[in-house]
Amino acid sequence: MRNFCILLALISAALAAGCAAPRRPAGEENVAGPTRVTAAHQAGPWQQYLAVMTDRERIEFLNILDDSDRRRWVRVNGIDVRAELAGKLARGLTLETAKRRLSDKLDVEEARGDSVMLYYSRFNGDTRTNYYLKFESNQLVNWNTYTVAQQDRTMELMTFEAEIMRRLDIALKPGMGPETIRKMAFIANERLNEVLQGRHRDRLKDDNVKDRTDYKRRVVVDYDEKTGQYTVTVPEKPGEGQEVIVHRPSTDNYIVEEQVIMTTAQADFLGWFAKEPQRKIIHRPFETHQFLLPYKSKRGVKETVVVEFSFRDGLLEQWFVYHDE
Image 1: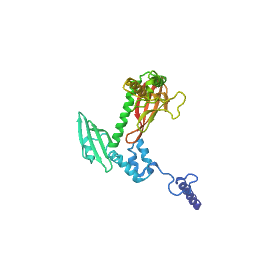
Image 2: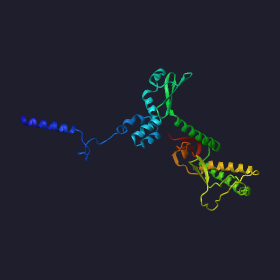
Image 3: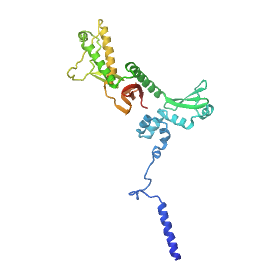
Image 4: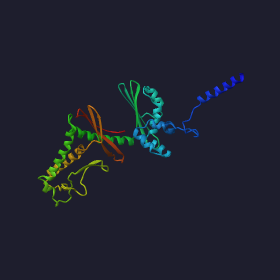
């Protein structure tokens, strides 16, 4: 009886150990090593840099496969400085504490009332990264870094967006409906056709003037990535009702030239209003229309500018111009 009790106890202990032991999923009993790799393990030494990147930077970085190219990309874009500052700075730090934590020499300190700005810069061998810290009531509230390339890109992009917004402010009014906006594009095209096909037609067809400036009849409004401008193009094989009108400006038709330039520019800008938006977000009573405009900087960097119309109950309420970061 005593031996039976001992045997029973051993069997119970073995069963308990078997229940407590981790079990592999079915079909993986003979798999050696770890069966799952976490995202943190995949990131490895790059985790500190990924944590401070924007979405566009993260995508560009992950498309680089070679580690040496990744290290250079991190330095060229000033990500190394950004990651270091993220480990040293935090909201709420006092001015003196923040200064002690930074190894770079202070370039400029500006004080305006309770607000203080600190400006620094660092050259890491590949690029110069500028950064600033903003304090309110002796507490750090914001900091940011930027390279010269980032600053140039942002300035070019903001200039382009500001010009689009300026033209939108001239053309649009709150309370317009989508059909009203589309109609503006067709009216602009009709005005251009009137100028090119109207009473000035003979002057526009004058082939005797040298050093001419050519204006083509607007058939297609498109975006030219090489110049960063909207262009008016005519198909190689014009269809019915399509023809090339050449304007030969001379001393007696500057008024005609001015009308052609103005109406062409208006048709170029308003032409994309006639197109369907690439995105529609419907959340009644609101409806958002987004147009995606390609943009290429002078450095050859391609961007996407978003023109957004916000409608409420079918009437235009607000419009915005911005870029995805």
